[in-house]
Image (tube, rainbow, N blue to C red; front, side, top):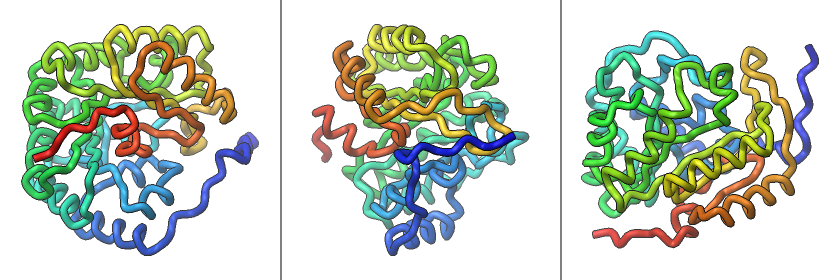
Length: 292
């Protein structure tokens, strides 16, 4: 089967530069994973050259089989209890002012890895005081105790991506449920009304405009603050095909429509990913907190 050619607005420069090389050496030297590499993010070159990266904790093997994601699937190794300390050390070495921490799904763990998330937040705070900490968490299969463990560690932003419309979950997000995604966002504000919440969607899996609007309404009804909208890109021939490439103008129109519904800020564009310009999203929303 012939692979679809990317439209010109989706073509990126290969990563390189002094900052990119330094950051890569730091990550690998501390035996840490980045979602930038594992998920084959198209913005890797730009972000790493700017000295910005997203840490991926709980290993590099996911227990779920999402058909849009390039992260390895299978049986994970045991948890690395020293990983949180090394993430904190990396954040300090890189002088980061905004750290994003995400993970693979760890359905093999009773708490889904929530305790390691909490430890990682504490270690970043210890090693790099004043840094904004954003966590992009799994759905924990609706485990409220696990969600509370993360919230009690006081991240600045709690992110969980809905990814796509409910109809496509069965094919695209095996092991996940749309209801669990909404639950994470709703329960976060119930448990901590001051927490900033964030979520993201991919376009191009076959969703309709009305299905997108229905999801946006669901998110606004749960008082989600920040939203990212980006283009799905097929990481390998084994993953789901791209049903449509949305143009930059279409993404601009969705930004206008979503912000009119009530989001504090919407980052929308073909190459936008949930941690792309995460610090900028936080600032533009006017939600910066005073740091000690």
